[in-house]
Image 1 (cartoon, rainbow, N blue to C red):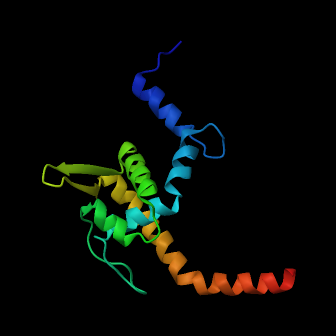
Image 2 (image 1 turned 45 degrees about the vertical axis):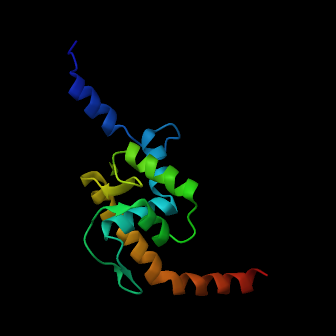
Length: 147
């Protein structure tokens, strides 16, 4: 009987991840990263908070203070923003830096892992903005047909 090294066991488990299986950890991660606030936070940090109407995300990744993120993400509650930032930090997608000033300054920045996800999410955000008129037209057509 051949023995399996720890690295081989990890590789085997990784190959067996299947988001279609309810108990799979990748499903929980997919659930987290598909959240609208995660998408918008990644877009903001990945584009340095820059955004122009119709231009998608422009700018280079940079750190942003909590207050900057809060102002940029219209409609997010303080509780939701804090929870989302904590979960992204826990997953290793961003880093939180506390600077001992008065008052304390807290900033967030994407890690390499977070930046790789940002590139994927930027495409999703751009797609939503580009195709919103089509979706609205389809909804209207559907609603008139169904009612």
